Image 1 (cartoon, rainbow, N blue to C red):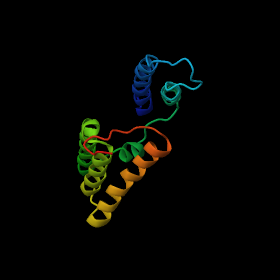
Image 2 (image 1 turned 90 degrees about the horizontal axis):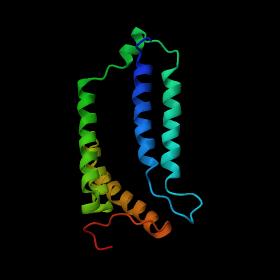
Image 3 (image 1 turned 60 degrees about the vertical axis):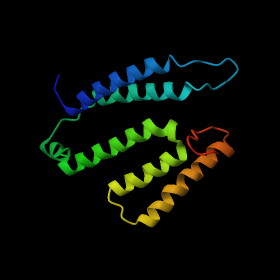
Image 4 (image 1 turned 120 degrees about the vertical axis):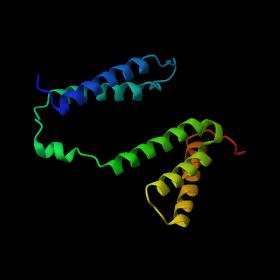
Length: 152
């Protein structure tokens, strides 16, 4: 077995898909619903598993050019780690603080961290986007999002 990147990533993704499928098959089912809430997670899990098997068996060999393309600069790694950290904070505080406030803060600070310096435009988008999305989900789709500290 040649050790190329596609085989390693395919194996990792297959393990991830298997764990994801095991968890998605534990979701509760409801009797009178034709398409249940577990359909999308199961479909995505099976799709990931099939695509990981295809990736594992693909005939791509590593060349020096491909290895050079995979190089990630230290600055980019720091940027990805920062966005990952901001995302973790967003996930942890979403239920407590609420969708509108946390999404506004997330969009603003993530854009600021990534180098966007037009603060007025950033603030307008950071506030209007979550309100728009919240309105669609709550008023049109009747799906409740965490309201948190706002009395909506």
